[in-house]
Length: 625
Picture 1 (tube, rainbow, N blue to C red):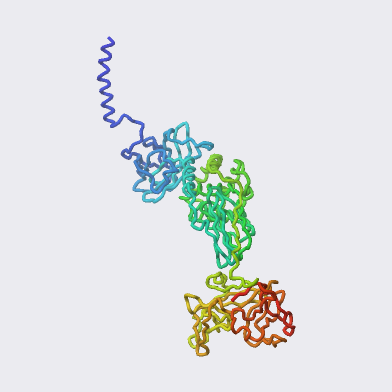
Picture 2 (cartoon, one colour):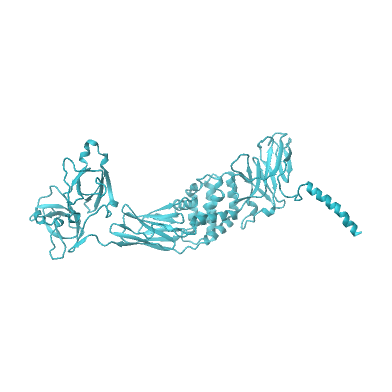
């Protein structure tokens, strides 16, 4: 009897198999492209279920009698971020008549396989779902709010336009992974060593050399006679930097939205005070001094992990919401007063605890919501992000804790005094000026270009041999005033560097360009060697500066019938000189008198304080010729 039943089951199985084959597949529950089906809209609208999708069309949305077609299709949304927004079903297309758009939103409920939903740690998973909608020909989709029904396994949304809908979920884990990957790529596993590292710079009589710590590359430079110090990151942790002595501080940022935003927030919201700059990957800290400090420069670095968190949040915003907002949104936020809340929440050097980090996250997204005009899709993504603040805090702290930033530290720029230039003659040092190579060019205070002189006046824009500096490159120039001494460029004959001394004894360098050599008034040119030239100025042992002058000067005094120039400083007065014949065979020491004792200081004669005062002799520390 049992054997007979088994035999009778065979035909039954064959029938079932035939039915399955007729249906093309026994996988009756999988979503597949299918022929469109639907219905007709009545006076009260329509309530349809097609392929498991429930569609409610309210009365008045489309004309009565409109045909409704709907079906699942194999289609991906165009222009969507498929990495962070995960589609939970195939595209479901809804067509009304010949392509009508509804006057009122349709209520669409799409079944979703629960296994496709991503469990979001430390966040409300149902709040991470939405409905994506894309019209025919649209380059990007829109998002609308979606409601997850865990019992029914469906997502319901009010759909304002057609043609395709997809239930989607924002994968916060994927967002943070993309953020981390992007930050790691921008930070780099290796931090390239700038070419300027370990290269000293000489300004005046001082050479500066930076000693780079492990967490930063430090370079020095010369900007028109002023010292510059630049620190580049060699650590993923941001630092607040400053110098001693203080200098003007700026930031140089690379093309990075998150980095530029963090630096802008630091400056606009008061994170960085005067003489401070942020140092982080992609943002160099630059310091410019007024002149060149003669002593060592200290560069202080204070850890600032809160700024890394701000950069991470900017990246989260850019990755998750940037597709739906204006490209200048972060720039607007960086300038907003509400970012001050972040400053109030955390300070440089303070530990970035979960509580502090949560405050920064709350302040950041609260400020974004109040400043940026968010489209509906952007608002939805922002709402999803706000639903998981604990997840964002934990993920951001996880990224930050991957790095090990050293404790606060200091770097030193060493100031090394150069060996004094020139040669000693007794105790006095004689220096042969070489302004086109000794730093005077970098200290030019004023430039005058004779090419602007009218053609009929060009004959007056000329230079001829100097009376003060009788050396082959020494000239006196007659435009736009009288300058003497001027030193001719070794490469451009019409260019000159001219030296004047003010009443404070400070040397001023003026550059004259495109001057003529000689004129109908004078064609004289010197031929002497620079090292054999007579002095143009001297510095006394008490700091007084005496500079040569020519022309009719004050009356002579006993023993010194002529004047050589003027002196400024402690022994200010008239620089005196005797009969020139005594120097006819020693031009290099003209206006100087031999030391009182052999091997001592050469001397000059000065009528101190009053041009009629008797001349006195003073020791000369340095002679410039």
